[in-house]
Structure formats: C-alpha cells, structure tokens
Image (cartoon, protein in one colour):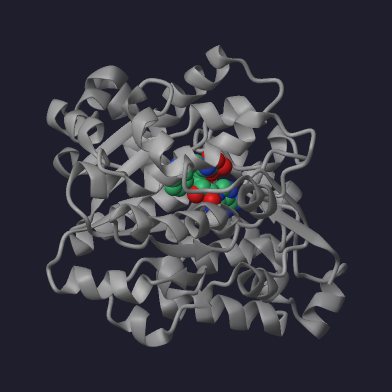
Length: 388
Ligand code: TYM
C-alpha cells in the first residue's frame, strides 16, 4: 500500500482505512450496535461506509432510553458542495427523524479563511450562503435544529476562550500536523470546532453528542473528548466514515484539491453532466476488452460506480447482490453498470435540487432565520462556564 496522509486540511495518497482507524485510536462498529438501530437503517450505516466510532454504542443507548441526544455536523465553506460533502447532513437528518436527535450545524467560514491562502473573507462568506442552500434543502426540523455561522455568531468567542485554556500547543501541533509555517489561526481554530461539538450541551443541557463525519475530521473529536469532562460536559461521540471515492480512484477522496472541477459530482449537476462524468472518469473494475471481460469478469470492489451504488444509491439488497454477481461473472459490462449508476445519482440529485429550488423560492434568509440561535440560547452561551 502506498503512503498516505490524512488531516482535516489535507488528504493525500491511497487511504488505508483500517490503519487510519488504528492510528487514530477509534473502534470498528460492532454489528450488534447497528442491529439496534430503527429500520430502515440508513444505507451508508447498514453497508459499512460508516465504519469506525467512539462511544456510538452509548449514544444509541441514550437515544433508546429517551434521553436527549444530539448531532453536530458542519461545513467549512471553501467552494460549492459536492456529493461527498452532503452525506453527513443526510445522516444527521436520519438521526433526527428516526431517533429524535436535535441537530447543530456549524459553518466554519473562519476555518476556511485561515487555511486556504487564496480565499478572502468575502469569499468564505459567499460560499457559506451558497452552501446553506444545500444544507437547508436537506430539510431539518426547525424546532430541533440550529445553524451557527462562526464569523456572525460571535457569542462563541467566550466558550472558545475557556476551552482553549485547556489545550496545549504541543497537542494541537501534533494532532493536526502543524508546521512552523502554519499561521497562528490554525493553532486557534481547533478550539472553535471543539466548542461547536459542545454547543448542544451548552444551549440545551448536558447530553450525548454524536458527530457523524468522514474520518479526516476525527482529530477534532479526539481533542474535544479530552476536554469535555473537565468542563462539566459529557464526552463527545463520533461516527466516522470512509471518503466517498473520487471518480478516478476507489481509495481516493472526492475532492477538488488536485482533481479539478470536472472530476467531482456537484450537487447542482444535471442528468447529462452526471452521465458524462461517470462515463468519462469513473474508475472501472472492468477488463480492457469485452472479450476479456466476458472471460475473466469485472472486479466490483475497485469499481467506483459499483461502490457508489453499494454505499449510497442502491437501497435494494437483492438488486445490489444481483449487480455484483452479474458484473463479477462478466455478464454485465462496465457501460451498463455506469448507465445504471448515473441514473441513480441523477434521481437523488433531482430530488435534492427540487428542495433547493424551494429554499430559493421562499428566500434563503427567510428559511435560514428559522434555524438561527434564539435569544435565550445566545444568553446560555454567554452565561456558560463562569466558574471555570
Ligand atoms: P468540510 O467542509 O471539509 O466537509 C464537510 C463534511 O463533509 C465530509 N466530507 C466527505 N465525506 C465523505 N466523502 C468525501 N469525499 C468527503 N469530503 C468531505 C467531511 O468529513 C465533513 O464532515 N471542519 C469541517 C467543518 C466543521 C465541522 C464542525 C464538521 C466545522 N465544525 C463540527 C463536523 C462538526 C470541514 O472543514 O468540513
């Protein structure tokens, strides 16, 4: 296996997920925890795309006992959103609907301003608004969901100061792989994201908070867990996924860094564009010639179209099994698999885009207002931790 590197700000090479989980000190998700979840279980959970965790079992137990629980998952607005970015949000929605979780969504415009050299404040704010159209299109319950925008909701400064006093420079330097050239915003920002993870406990009451994210975000969960109990809060739980593969590699990350605009599927792509991208770029586990393919069969495990179906888009267990068998035996060719995958993705996007239009028709700010912190919640943030 080639060398790889995963930090919240950079993913390089072919990711070895089992090694990453061990290195980070997370656990694999036991089958019996998944089997306790309410049906129908979200596809990426059921089929192992979410594959590692910290205290997920405790979260499930608390939710089942009717205790208040919540989800935090966010977005750093550095551009438009692609298919991989929206996944944690649909996951959060599932936990809200099926397990009664409250949801808190931070928009870390500060983070992207700090780590992306070229971006200006104006840019991250504009991307933040654009990304919120997609996040609101997911359809969260406004009574049980809050959105916090770092550069606007400045109340979070106070808890950030309290938290930052309890984290050393050497921890942040090691956990996030900082160098002498990193600007000091990179050192400070992790305290902000730690506060995001604590916010449901601050604005509502102490409770188990689960953070569903791709594993690149795990370092924040780790440092938050170290501090939580020292500031009177329950330890944060994590639910960690693999990366939705890039079109060109089953072990890469769907991302614009290095890949370019053309090679990711944007949430705004129409059917024709999706089909074109899948046909042209999706890495195939098929053989170079039809004759060889018929004789030797395809390899579903490394075929990006198959992986998209398996983890996200083919709900029907019998159908996915049938596709796997037909492809492996050589009966199904890459072209047919790609056509089917493109249709499935477009179907998902059509629904998402319809809800996106609804947000725009109603007016982004009007819809967003329903999700902003209430006055009493802002007061809670201001009052929190005076004895710490
Ligand atoms: P960001 O904006 O880089 O990514 C948003 C979310 O999408 C996940 N993600 C992916 N998941 C699957 N496959 C992919 N190819 C893929 N690419 C990105 C990321 O893991 C992330 O969950 N720092 C965060 C934003 C943030 C946040 C938080 C997240 C701020 N506060 C609190 C969780 C909890 C970020 O830059 O994500």
